Length: 575
Image (cartoon, rainbow, N blue to C red; front, top):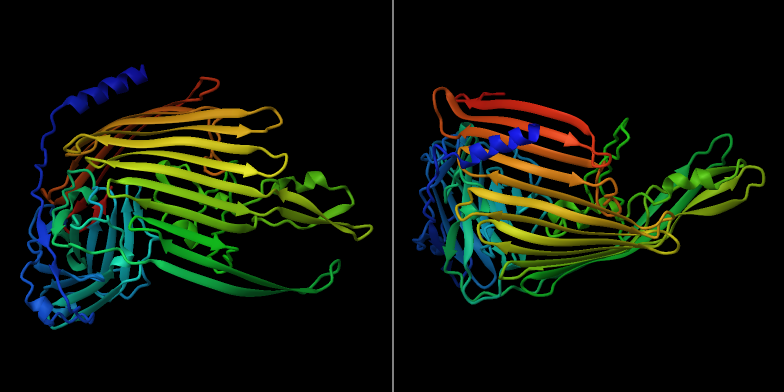
């Protein structure tokens, strides 16, 4: 009964004409100007190349708090380029210097500051983009935009300066072509957009309008023309390192004091094979300076998922993360038999050392995307055999116990960008262990297909997991997820079917807290984005969820949840 009710309800709302459909906004075009003498990046836009450039991006449009409205103050942006870099000059007009919010923060943190940003969709696929933003305090923010959302970990080398006079502030940016990836064609056709945030008004403005009724972000960019006959430069960096550690132990009644010295050495390499593909390698890495995980008191029977803090595994992983099948913390993570050491020692033995991480020998990733929107990624990593040490309390002898065999990790990913902010991906993860230990493989897919107006979409995931060499025989499992949704306009709705078999296990190179689930869910909401009455916006949401076990097929729960949230004209939000 609940399933039939949900299906009928969603069918009614999906087929009901929406009250308001946002018309396609005209796409603006900006022409970049080629120059021979680059400007000095000092935040002072007084060079002749800026003064004589007449093609400007103006007439910004509010995204918030009044979508489609005129900004409170004007903005003007110009773009230049030469064979080495793209240059952006922004004139951010205001009313007074003390009205410009400028909080000094660490890199990649907006803080409470006015911000100017530029976005480049260099492959013009309406999905992937580069962001370069600067706060009024001069802090740089750079990010990658992908189908998976924003990649906050991405960093590039680029220049920017900010100046402020009596009433206005100005930004000058140089982005080397080495910081971008773009197709090898004589005439470049990029998507572009500019953003300006005015904090005192909680105001966000974009050059090409970002309509909240339209699904997506990169697909709402404007166009940039005029960049011709530029080449991607050689991209090569080699970073060798040497590190040393000195550990001391003060000792206790049973163990004498000790001291230990360790030396490590290795190398990082990054090479741009061509305009699209980049090779990254680390040899004998040392993550001793990586921030530690937060201490978590876990009283549940489920594993805790930690963030990835190692820079190599954070950058350039967009292709590998498609479908959410790859959990990079498995590489160099807890040894396979870490918790089994107690079962392999006698009553007279004690554990004196049991490493919580396996030793990473090297890791390599090759990834990129062609001009046709085809992306490919190959990842490989190897960890050495890991041993715990145990000591016999009667004889004092010490022996080693294997906790993790030599292991090879592989990920292969293919992704094709499609029109209308759509894509289809294929991902394979594989773990091979030396000796008489099981191997694991997972093959999965992720997709999103939307109509031309990006109002309706179907998206989902599917995967098959395999374990080979188990004592009880090989093990196979599967998962599937499919969603039909209305993703644009004021009225939003979706219906989802999700299945995980009781033998589905991606955890050798992925992450899943628990399997054995069948879930049908539905969602409907009506959102008002334009100010009305005393409100700036209003969001409503109604959710249904019906859940069973996959094996045995028994009912577990049925949930209904509703929410309303809105922002008043004084920016006070309530929900």
